[in-house]
Image 1 (tube, one colour):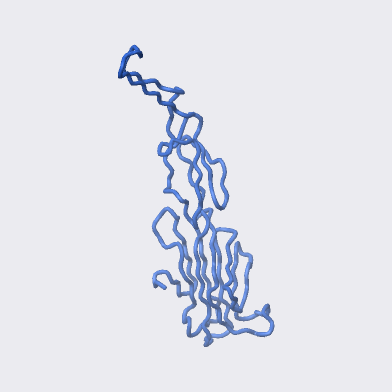
Image 2: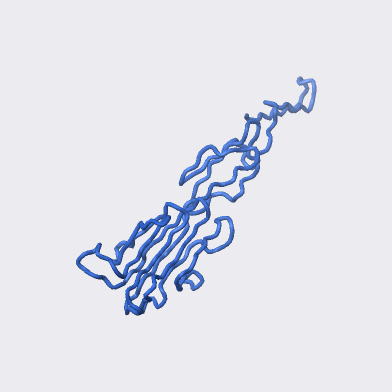
Length: 221
C-alpha cells in the first residue's frame, strides 16, 4: 500500500482527477491510529468527489469497532460506519462482511462517517478502498454527433459526407474499460470524403494498346 494513496486523517476532501489527465484515481482511507486504535468524540468524516458523469466504488476492506449487541447485526447505535450519497444514508454497519461489502454511488460523490462514542478505543477502526468507475461522456468531434451511450459503450457517427480519417468509416464504437474509454481522447475530427462515387485513372489510350494499365478506385459512401 503506497503512502501517497492512503488518506489517514479525518475531515478530508478527496477530489478524483479526470480520467484523461494524470492523477491518482483510486486509494485507501483509514482512521488515525489504524490498526491499533480509533477514537474521538466527534465523527471522523471524509468526502470523495469523482469527475462529472463518473461514480465512486467503495469497498469496506476492514471494520473493527465496538458493537452494542454482537448477537444483533443490525444493532449499531453508537460506534458505526455510515456512507451517504446525496445526503442520504445508503449504508450503515459496525460489522465486517465476507466478502467485503461494496457500495457504488448513484451521484458523483460519497460522504463517509466513522462515529465513535469514546475518546480512545483499542480496536482497529476502518480501512476502505475507493476508485472511480464509469466513463465520462466524450465530446463529439467536429462534424459528428453522439448516437448512443450507456455504462459500457458509446457510438458516434460522422455527419453526411464525412468519415473518421484514421478508419475511413462513418461510425465509431467505444468501450468503457473501468473508468477510461478504450481509445485515446479526444477522438479525431471527421473529414469530408470524396463526392464522386468512383475515380478512373488511365495511363494510356486507346485501350487496345498492349501494356495499358487502368486503375479504378471505388470510394464507399
